[in-house]
Length: 445
Image 1 (tube, rainbow, N blue to C red):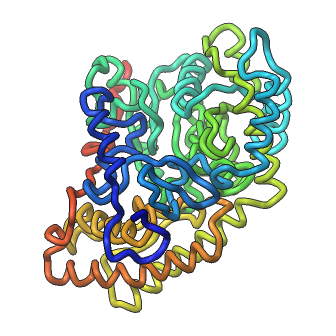
Image 2: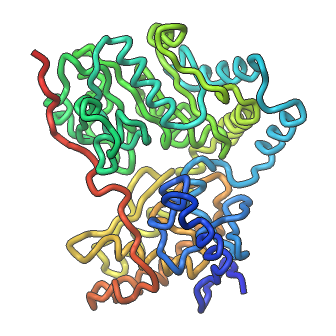
Image 3: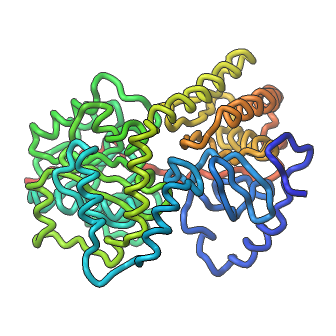
């Protein structure tokens, strides 16, 4: 019997999910195209593996189970699934075609629209994925500055220049690994100690979950300007969410280059690099950055409609309001129970539930909460990625679920048996080594 969004005495039947999963074994390496959607991030035997449809803030798996979704496609679905105005724009464009043999008017129209809302968008270029444009930004920064080294802070995609700082760096030449280094968020000294005369660019997520302190982003900008280094904002998560103009608008710091994807088209595949005209001009001939599907019209039509909705409906304010209810509600429930080992943190539009390692294994605690939330019809990966379709009813139901689940977690932690309460395998970390923090680049003599 499929789950509905209510308390279920039984866990969801995921027989069809399991059949599909078995068919993928040996066929699809790692089983998935997107790590956060794959089996390592969801408790095995309990969580569904394949979703079939969505509407608003709700999704249905292949077995017919229905859930409130707080992952929202791992970020892109900012308005809600099957959002009528966006889908209508896609259908209208579909009548005329998808990809053409010459440029399409939407390339100009969407660029103009982006220039009106993003502070640094003197020039605009499009591609399909986030790591396309972060890599393009790094390349053009190297060309402009005639330097090679990169300092990064956050997650910037799978390409060699970034992923070399993680433990998933097989196949990357040592020479490439020697060119990228990291610094700590909200720690300006870690940047000052790492930047040098061969640093082409500093690329960072304006925030991940930790809130900015002491004008950190402005200080980063000042350090970059003093060093002749370009500043790049990776706004995959902040763009069109924290403000219409993204973190640039919200924090009042204008980077040299900025990169967007996810929320800009409510689920359609498109990415954007914006920036100073003198830097971006190098894409004319000096820096090669072209792709067959960069001007694909369905995604551009979706982006036009999505940006209009975000502006007209003041979506960032809504996301903050609804997300704030969840954050404050979760922390209130934990405080009333006397639980000090878990907290909801982050900017309201996208928050994370954290667990204190001093009280047990954080991944086991996360797995237990995930298990119990799924039982209650909530697709929960430890985050609240808010969308415009998350209703007051969704919030109320979710907080009631937390009221039921946190005592279960508290009891398991107190009895030191969280692992034995799990019905499936513990979720896994994405990376074991996330960076070479505070490793100063090799000095060029």
